[in-house]
Amino acid sequence: MSKKIKLYDATKCTGCRGCQLACKQWNDLPADQTENRGSYQNPPSLNPNTWLLMHFNEVDAGADGVKWLFRKDSCMHCTDAACVRVCPSGALTHTKYSTVAVDQKKCIGCQECVTACPFDVPQYDAKTKKTTRCDMCFSRLENNLEPACVKTCPTGALQFGDEDKIQAIIKARMAALKGKSHLYGDKFVGGTHMLYILPEPPASYSGLPQNPRLPVSLTSWQDGLKKRALLFSSNRERG
Image (cartoon, rainbow, N blue to C red; front, side):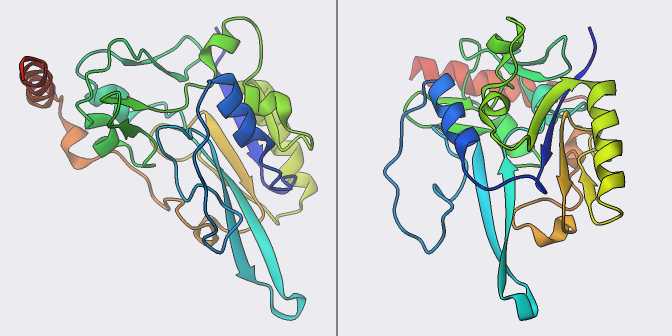
């Protein structure tokens, strides 16, 4: 099975948030009450009911005033995924597409994945006592369908497919942009299966890690960590 890649081309994004809504609809995620915080970005961050969030950054464009920088925030589906490494119950696994899947029935709510993820993606739900995150619409992939966010994107900012196909698209697009773009996600944690083409340097985007890496504790196998997490879960169930 060929590796699958999702590409977000911010140079084509209009910030319509269609992807954010499609994610909620497909995964049956409830809406949250929003409030005006001085930004179109809502909610302010990922949460148990929001697995995909569009970030809105206003930056000074000098004589041109202000310009928007949009960024799609969701699971990066790392090749060397810290969440998979630390999960003691097998709830998080790599799929045949090289994406990361979640089995909620196996999740024990230990929150080790929350602590380990360098992108701050997994979210703990205090109501269900489990963690949640994007699984690249695994149920859709299994039925030869693209992720819901990709399906709904009106501008082609989101694309999905086999690794060689997406890499060809990236190469052609960055050549067309003539050096005025930056590829993000290919050089960390063994490479991610969610790649960005950004019109500005990654440092211009708030909340985007500049050098995401596995926690130091993961340089050795986490047997002790997993045992503690399982003990925590057992004690919680007895209590």
